[in-house]
Length: 86
View 1 (cartoon, rainbow, N blue to C red):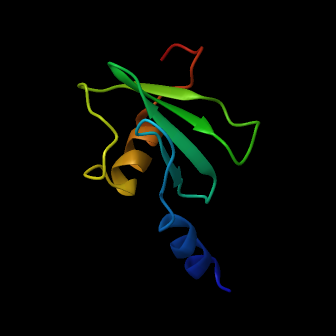
View 2: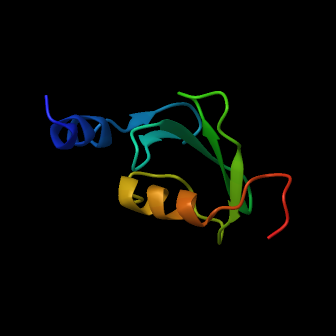
């Protein structure tokens, strides 16, 4: 299987967790969970324990089906690691 087809199969596997949490793949194929709070989305890498958690302030958006994987990946890329200052 080529790398491109492997990425497509991973990218198309968005899973629902509980309370609106979402599981998605980043650009390299690592799996992340996105969990929303009242004013932020918290990202945790679930396929590699060495990955740092990240958070991004958002305008009270819930992680419903209208927010696609491309948006989650863009937010993840913008989100700073938790515990570090920009």
